[in-house]
Length: 82
Image 1 (cartoon, rainbow, N blue to C red):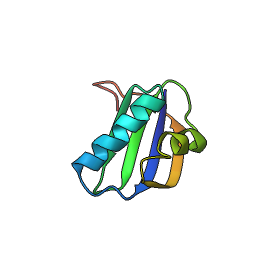
Image 2 (image 1 turned 90 degrees about the vertical axis):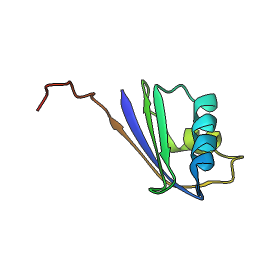
Image 3 (image 1 turned 180 degrees about the horizontal axis):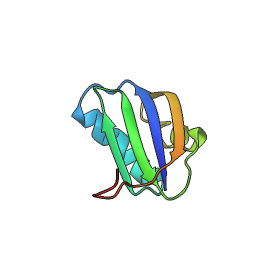
Image 4 (image 1 turned 45 degrees about the vertical axis):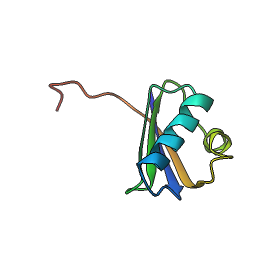
């Protein structure tokens, strides 16, 4: 699993978050996607690594500007892990 954090400029409300989430889901194979207009970020969990080019292509027609992408391996923490 991979966790990709995307910094996005231009999200102003919860509808913007929905637009970004829908664009990501329709263009990429993801397990989970969650956006925050207050933080200006979208966090994507996926089986395969996601590149900045893939994210840029997914959001190309959305009107939002990507200011950074970071993809790191992700290990889900268990209920009793320390």
